[in-house]
Length: 180
Image (cartoon, rainbow, N blue to C red; front, side):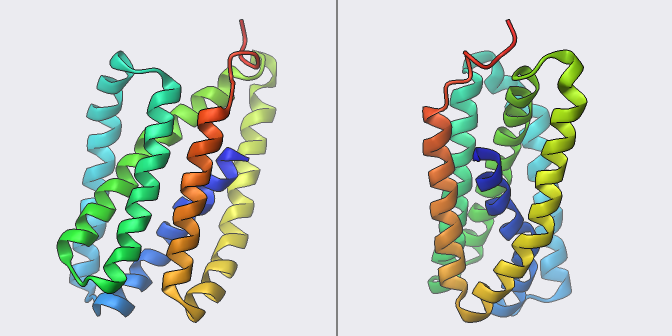
């Protein structure tokens, strides 16, 4: 369930952000391309530098929880940017969402991997991939309908979904489900 909520929040950002920039900020292809380049740089820094450093200092659960909270903050910043037209707010939103995703996603996949025996890894990863594929089909349909009605409602909803996933992840006890 935590993964489902996380992927919904991230998919809304991935599937809608360029349209959001075009509609709300009247973004040109150059502006949108520049922001997406910035997204890639943030992803590399988070996964290659920040995550390995944090893994030495904190538990997987703390890093995963922080990642989900940071994603929620980023989605909240996009919500804020609807009313406060600011490149700084959008930049902070991108940094937060991509950094949070870069922290949570590897932790989540690691916890999933540890939750089953080695001979069940393929089945688990196939199930996880199926979940993501279903999200990739269903989320854009819902996002389009809600976004057409109100970008505010869309980003407020996914912000609360991300925070809900953080609460669930904080309360999740993986120790009794991990391999010994």
